[in-house]
Amino acid sequence: MSKFLALSLIFLIIIIIVLPAALVRGCSFAPVPAPRIDRSPIESPAGEINIRVYRHDLNEIVELPLEEYLVGVVAAEMPASFGQEALKAQAVVARTYTVNQMIHYGGPGCSVNPGADICTISGHCQAWETEEDSLGKWPAADAAAHLNKIRQAVRDTAGKVITYDGKLIDAVFHSTCGGQTEDSEKVWSTAMPYLRGVACTYCEGTRWWLTEQKLSSAKFATNILPYVTAVPVSSAGRPLLEAASRSDSGRVLTLRVAGESVRGRDFRSAMGLPSTNFTWKIDGEQITFTSRGYGHGVGLCQYGADGQAKAGKTYEEIISYYYTGIEMGTLSPWQ
Image 1: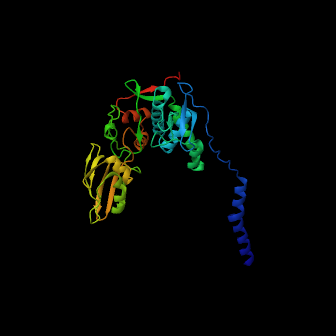
Image 2: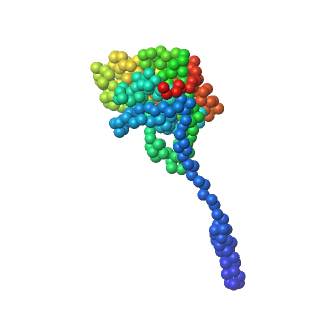
Image 3: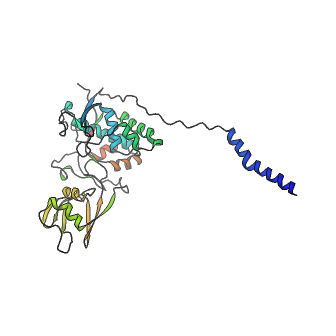
């Protein structure tokens, strides 16, 4: 009986351990090659165009090929996970904005550094990052594919720009509109015919669609003091915040703090809110802000562009949706 058990045990060891190990050793699995980065030159119908970029991180001006510069802009300004048509739309928008700034094309250049066409300060011109920065921020397994995806978006739209009445537009953009984009004159002083507010639900449910922030009365008072002369809280510690005037899109134009008028954009900056489309609720010495969207709300809604891309829209359709009455054009050759 013991001999039978011993043979049975040996048989089981062969079946469970030895045989599978032998099969695994006998099989060869070819490794999946990692994608290579396509760094072939991006050719534009306009030919070779160089741009002078003020890199604020290095405090120096560098000269780059326009299309290569745009790869760094798209990588910095829009998630690589977005739909390809959204990335193409961003490339065209960024190209239009950039060329409109270039001194060679009659633009004003960069006021931060008069010797440059544009700078890398996102709040002043537009964000930009090096290839090394881009590859470093993405997961290593996805980095090459992400960069190739962005380079392809720039390549597929090389030389494409947006015009209105034969002139380049001021192609401003923002992250998330929260349901409707804004008329330009509600944010800045000039009414541009192509920067009209449009309804947009394509960004619904994204990370900045609806957000909430809580502040204490003390923090509220500290933040708003640069904009008012009166004490902004009551003797009981309750924030003195009154009804606001709003644009048709729901964004706050002005509101009253302790009886004094404060612009919505200044209030947003003071409180660190993602947009001027906000409401508030005061509960004792705490105030809760509920905000829609992120950014100034004018022009292209980036998360909305991604929503449209995923709904099957082309980059031309996306651009035409957010910029009223525009035409697509091709950049003129460098003279």
